[in-house]
Amino acid sequence: MDLQDSEAPHCDFISVHEDIVNRVMQVMPADQQLLDLAEFFRVFGDSTRIRILYVLSQSEMCVCDIAGLLKMGQSAISHQLRVLKQMRLVKFRRDGKTVFYSLADGHIETILAQGMEHICE
Image (cartoon, rainbow, N blue to C red; front, side, top):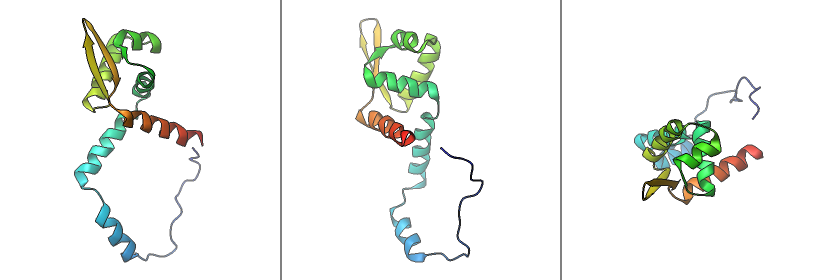
């Protein structure tokens, strides 16, 4: 990603295109939905959470497995899993004394794949 341009290109004169503005206003989501969407994407802003999501896109795993794979402590992994669970990005199931985590649904894997495709272009 090239961040060398210090200023975004802009019009040389101010002229609002009312037809475009009105058309877009008709399809804009409510402010609360946009805030919720921003919060959803904020969760993807942490590399540890991204790593956990990628791991879980391959297989369901318990906290011990994830911690071992990522070479991190179980408490750090548990903390991040709690955040991911609160945002409904992961789910869990119990098998005896073991708790297995997995991605909540196929949307999460799609988001990861599209993000990776975008940065690799």
